[in-house]
Image 1 (tube, rainbow, N blue to C red):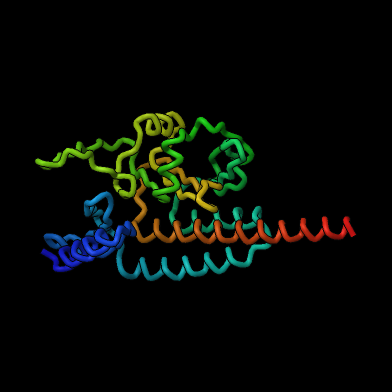
Image 2: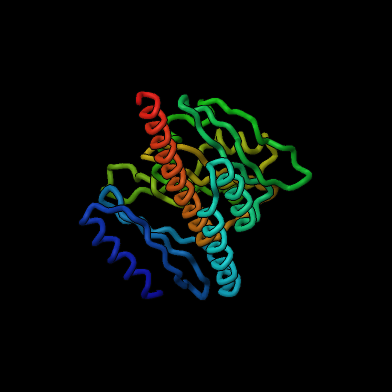
Length: 261
């Protein structure tokens, strides 16, 4: 076996003792096949997930350059609106999805599609508003905990979990990258003619502020490295939102002070 595998597990056990849950990703080889190994520790257990690695070194190098350029563009945007418009274009260029949308949630948890990049023959969704019930409370909690979710093929067959003897506590897959999704959500996507999807949460101050949602009209797998870059894009958006909000508050306080004077 690849020596990277037991080493990753050893490091996860150290983090487990410290109570940390940060996932670590390594490229490993099993039987001549390359895999992305994602290891994290949670609830007194270490979880190892193996995802087949299909990308070439040249392709990933080219992607790294593209991702760096995308981050630079996002940092230079003057407003939240322009930031999200650029973000959907950059995420679509990085991932190849047919449609990429930016949701912004309101105080009542309903969401508006405020930016969109799509294939020309697809119907535009920008401007549509969706009720809070589209994302139930338990799903909203998971979107905050596990910020990137991919369904490579809505026609997938879920694999049952096999419990090890002596473990009475159910396995918590909240932080898992390969965890199955709700059959209701799969049906929802199927009714829209969507065969693959990815969502990346925009979390501001511990709350689901918005989301980058991606749809594809055929099965579509996005490599783990690309998904992690999209997560960084979402974190950059969240930091920018906080910065814009802070500036707006400062401006409001200054105007109020001027009025009082």
